[in-house]
Image (cartoon, rainbow, N blue to C red; front, side, top):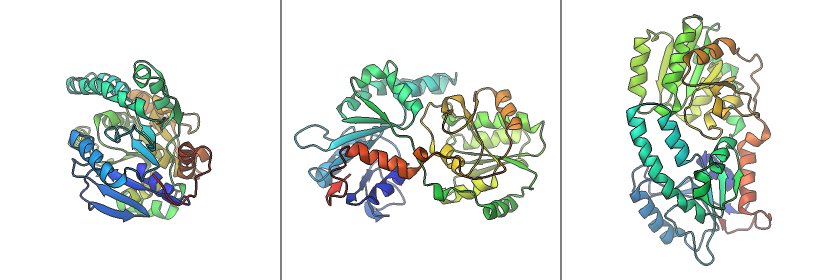
Length: 370
């Protein structure tokens, strides 16, 4: 989502965008893609660490300090940057969730290791005091906003004002394609009568894919036409594969692993229902928006439900409830996009631009750098 926003920002007249991020095997130290400068630092890829914060600060001071108008911090990414001082940039933090929310979601799993790991989330609550130094805090959806407004997170944030800018997708990339549907279903050995469920997410305990599988297994005993496609990678991959075998569902569940993002719309077109039983309180996840853009009906955890998207809500820990929803929800005959304008990438980017420059006076000036 952050990368999509950066590309959209770069299309705005006069806005230059640089991304500072962790090491990545697919990226050199400095490159330009889709008009966006990408600079990586030598720190563990894909996660925050002390080395990331140290080297991000060094890189910022060397390459960007004094030349930047806006700092957009994806979650805690910019915590180590010099956010105070004279003539500093406007600083905006994009919040995807809260340490307290992570703490609660791990305890809800009622398992030893998640509960033990939750202690780290409790410690991160102190780290979140750094959010007080930002000029603006943006929640990526109503659920995240509610978490920010509740104690103890509200106490940590202080007097900060919160805005909501929901995630958005490039609708043209995810529209239903009947030709791709026929092609992919043929490749997967699916009959036209097969009702095919799809999940696309990281295979992590908090994403609830194992719980989704249990719900599917219960429904599959009652509907022989049900099939399931699971897309993603993560620490639960082996456990999910083992559970598929234990349930004797190898011929009805396809564990696809990680696939290139540009291939995901094809799989959405091949499916009939999107299932996402996340245990984590989050905003409107992009996988849900992408499925909506493809015209799929959505079955998702109750805390993801939003009046704008028409989700069938379920309790992720209740296999019978998930099963009932799978048996009850029917594929849409008309696979047109089901997204309101405010959940498109273009709209989301425009709202960020307004946040960066509420007067609109500086949009289009040559040296506005984010």
